[in-house]
Image 1: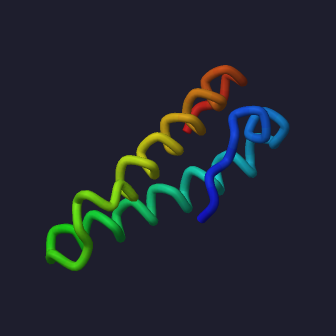
Image 2: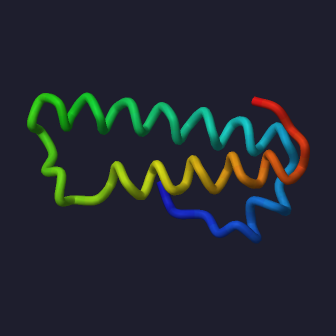
Length: 68
């Protein structure tokens, strides 16, 4: 899943933001499961990038006054 800039997120409507958040959280759970089984290396940084993207989406949702 490609990274999204904050400017692009601000242009999306609330339903698109919710969908994006759902996708990112699913991806995070998948990566955490793989990490627990030792299938990916912690040094890959994928988990950290996904967490940053989730925080970015949540920030934009908060700015728009949208609840999860």
